[in-house]
Length: 80
Image (tube, rainbow, N blue to C red):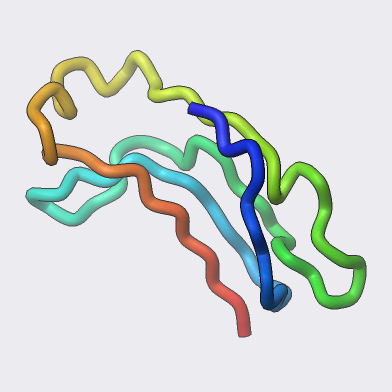
């Protein structure tokens, strides 16, 4: 899945990740598909890899997400 243009209108320095979430248990499955230790920095500006990137659903999901609505992609961004 490719995110070609993320429009960050109000950058705030923080951390971010994209993960697969099991909607029944509200828990992350596996490790993040993409993560940033510094995201949308106000000191260094937003980097290109933060607004244009790809993620792939991992094979390890097996059939956990085979039913519609069983899983979602979560884009988590925490900034202070």
